[in-house]
Image 1 (cartoon, one colour):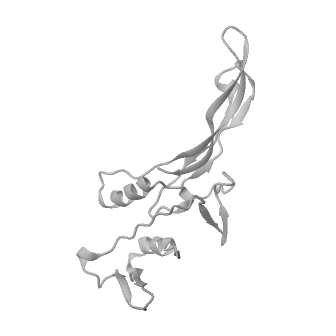
Image 2: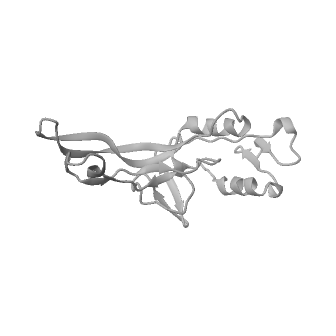
Image 3: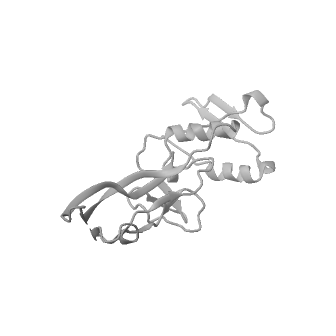
Length: 186
């Protein structure tokens, strides 16, 4: 199956609508006759302008990073770019003694991370969107009553903590969902 990414073209059209000359797609059968034609642009009839929505069953998310592709799921947080305004993971150091003095033995601090940033149309694979998020984003473009999707955690990992109970005994527990491993638009 072949695919093509029109994200950059669509982003350019959104920034400079006057330079949107449209999109033409032809699906050709083995006998070289068009099976399907899709035309958009200023010559398309207003009620027949196409909307292209694609989904992928591919679990590996790809991120374009200065012309290089890598799997963003395998290296969470390593694609952190403090200058980007798009949905991503950011550092968040939690110092237990600052909020609960004398309660925590170990760790004294940890990096919890948090998610923040825009979920701008069109949603790319790098923001790990659900199908619902893609549909909601499209509907929100046409209906101001529908809110845009939000940047939020999509994967967590646990931490082990050693702390004192009220009775003075020390307890070790594994706390689930304490570290944000990846973010996405949901």
